[in-house]
Every structure is written in C-alpha cells, then in structure tokens.
Image (cartoon, rainbow, N blue to C red; front, side, top):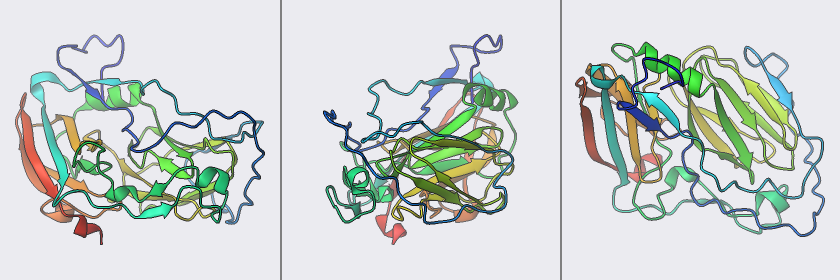
Length: 319
C-alpha cells in the first residue's frame, strides 16, 4: 500500500508505516545447539492434489537437514512505507479488547510431549490456539482481520505501491505452527509458503473462489503460488501430517485491510471518503462487527481519522 522509492508522488509528510509482519506472540528463540541430533523426516501421509493448484507454483528445498528450526532473527521485519494519499483519503482505526478479560487459550501441543508426531521439533515449545491469544501486557485481541467489503471508491496509487513494496506475502511453518497466524493477501502478490522446520509438512487450503491447493513441503522448503480472485471469507491453511496446525489468510482485490497487532490495534489507511462497510472477524471468519457479512457502516472523511475506539470482543463468539 505505499511509497515506492523514487516515486515523485511520494510525500514523506503524509506517508504512514504499515507493519510488514505482525508480532508472533509467545515464540521463544531457539536454544543454542551444541550437537546436532538427526531428525527423521516425516512420511508424507496425504497425497498431493492431482490437478494444478493455482496459476504458478515453484518449490525449493535446502540440501541439508538440521536438527533444529532456524533460530529466530533478532532484527525486526522491514517496515513498508505506504503513501496514504494525504488529504484526499481517510483512515479507519480501532482497538479490540477481550470482554471480561483475556480467555485461557486451549493448549494444542504441550511442551516436551513425546507422543506427538516429530516431537523433537513439534513439542519444542507449547502450542496454543492463537484465536484466544492476548497481548502479554494488554487485554488486546491479536490476529483479527479488519477489511472493507465492496469498498466505495479506490486508491490506485496505494494499490500500486503495495504491490511494488510488498510483492510477496510469506507464511512460515516453524515449530509446527503457521507464522504469522493471520495474513492479508492481495491479488497480484505472490503467496510464499515456506518451512523453517527440518521435517516434512504438507500445506493445503480449499478456498471458495480459487483452486484448492495441497502439496508436500520438504524440510526447509518453500513454494510460491498466485491466487487469481478475491475471497469472501478467510482461507485456512492446514497440515495433515501435524493436524493441529492451522493458519489463515484473507485474499482481497484491494489494499484496505489490516490485521490487529498484539495490543489489538488495527489501522486501515488510504481509504476513499464516503460510507464504507467494515468487516472485523476472527481468523476463522466469525464476525465481530455489527451487520455481520454486510459489514459495519463507517463514515470516512478526507484527511481525517475515523477512530472506532475500544471494541469489546466476547470470547464466547468462538465457541
């Protein structure tokens, strides 16, 4: 969504910073490995789809296998500066908090559980259902999608800059969970599905408007796909080898979207003025907003921020 280097239209005084990757909460750094222990690759249980999955796919894999997933990098993800369009467009923002305090997330894999598949990697740390997660120092609701449905108007410069500054959306598999848990994908970008794990995964998803995808991803491998159509609901990523694994992405054909951060905050920039329909939903498509699938009506004014304030989220919606 943003300021591409060398673009004469880019105005640093009106530029905004969009988080390239949301923080992954509760993910520790890998310990130092003094002696590598071999980890057997999992036998691929599901068969890959026989029909082609999308427009184009490429797969790569590392030549060697390590005993631990690659260590977390200390450096933050690169920021993507996006030109919000100055006074010609507006911004929608808000903060999501758990009603009644944060819930206790269900545990999917307990740390050190030797009974799970590929336990050396998959039970290296505790894995939880991140839909119920909250910020470590806040009551915020992370991983929630906030996006416009059937937006009134467009922002071509913002769209062009998004595709130029962030041509690839990457979703990793690390310690047998998807990172980030929620991601926004815009038609025209590539979707990179990769693995930092030294074991086999398979990646599958079954959207409504695009072809289904199912492919084995070897240790430290990656594949890239392109979706051709937007989706009405978030699409779930699964792994049949490790059935607790779940991740989500929302495929759109416009740049007016965000994912709430660890404090529950979201911000949608460069929005055309007028009455817009905003959807706020959990990753699995459970609506939080008024109006459900038709969206919550939000009036956007040029050059102004429409702040929805604090929005309480009932964890009971997920049950």
